Image (cartoon, rainbow over all chains, first blue to last red; front, side, top):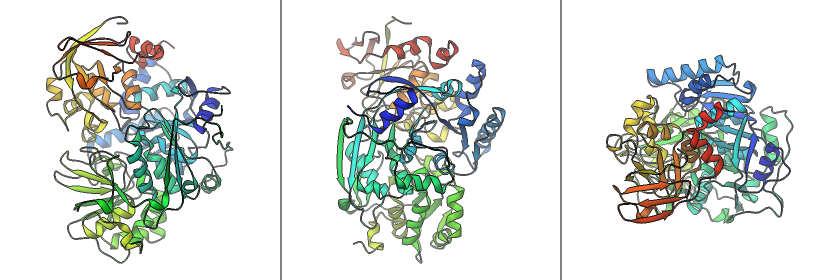
Length: 423
Length: 162
């Protein structure tokens, strides 16, 4: 019997020829990522002293202050300060702050290599699967174990194969595709499992879009959302300056899958995930009227270059609706700079958008765009849980950046294809 | 604590008790002690006041979904949660709980358990007795390598012995 990509990566990291799903293996970790909100300040710093141990390999550790940057208050500022000083104390040179959400920094700075194992103290660490990396979120104490030993145990996950074939319609994005997938599999349907995304839709998908897909694997409970490494991966890594050699893993023809889902891309319409669960997915065309107060484009899910570019196509030369605020947080400084150079930020700003720092802030309601009781936000982020972006009496609808932009223009959720000649 | 049975009163919740409910992000900048006052507050403002050490937290499907934030099990632990029973757990929350020495038990029959029921749990045998309703439920057995971590009181104690 053959192995899936995930099984092959785990086998290599465990130093064995073959693994079966369900087996428990200790594996060597290639990169360990910590953020500010759940990094050193939670358990790690204190318990590391208690254990009286150092970190196993400082060059394999990356620390990124992103959730509380720029800080909204003194407490947040102290957390960022603590994180910065901790990185310095332990000689961690891979320290970033005020650069944007950690996952975008990881994939821009070449910290995620195909075939490697990466763990991070944030659940959306599963995003690096788009680059063929077996990556997953861990808690702080688990990270402490990794920091002192360089190893972690994994139960080898069963794999669900998600096949999408064909081309997406104009006005439909990878975000719609992954929300549709989550709607079918369910928010716990892939718990403990790996998801492998294959088919011609992914083969023809640019990296920015692939990242949005893998980012949301955890929203169906998955450990990782893997996309096979191909020429698009190679090109992306070359462009960001990765010179490290890597192996292209692909699943064997006789690899075992616990479930297979097949979708036709041509049939997909723009969708939203309605409050308060990510799998509460409905086609926008079937949605009753939903008025919005805020529209948000940003985060490690929906704030990349292509997301802002697509939104700008809808917003160019137009004005957002009265009484609506459109907030845009480019997913990194690099995204910010590129969008600034190409005039995209100006287009968005002229349409009425408020362009914010690159940060996690509004996505988890800790600064830069929290919403109040009774307010409704349409967002290109990854979670719409009760109280996620602020008040527990607010509502969040998840959608593609195109749908967010279209909603900002009309003050209500609408099908973005009408602005693109699609319908 | 290897063979001790655990007995306590149930606080029962439903499906998808996610990490934004257990540990709302707005309070994460606080210390665990302060933040624990707001644990579960989006669905139950009084949780922190009414949950007493030794009580048992019971949910249904997909308990702990969402974030990797260890503030979720940490705040629960601070409030005295030592054991959580659910039909299923989200993966990261499950590992985080074990690593902190909280026993997370999967049981398919939690819909039969009501608020205020008194349970007696033998997690080594995979048995739960509902003393109030005089019912017995099976729970999945916890793998030995995890029992080892729980019995030591969590991953930190385990690491100290490496």
